[in-house]
Image (cartoon, rainbow, N blue to C red; front, side, top):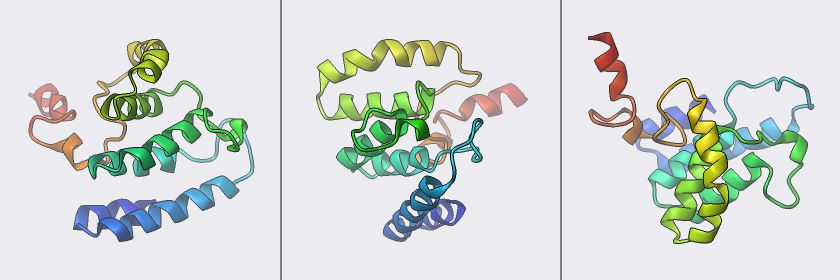
Length: 145
């Protein structure tokens, strides 16, 4: 996952996506445990970066898997009601004009957002737009004073 995110920052977009997809295969092969043995789900990173590149349909598929909405993806591996996946899927639905689907998940998104301990304006802080001067992480600089 780290190699994929680093390649993305270097501008090697397709190589980054290759490494992130490989990381998903490896993540999916992990045995089930609760709590999960990984900190950051790879689908959050890949979905967020796909969104940033305008590949919204691909991102939608990943976020549906991540949240347990996709048929054929084991629900036991899903991260149900997580704010990052909900934010990503809501962004996908909005950008694709799927207003009915967006209104279906909006309440779950709002509940998850209300309990988040940081402002959530993107599905993954790995997006380059997340760390832009006026991006979602600008609050960190303001907090430092």
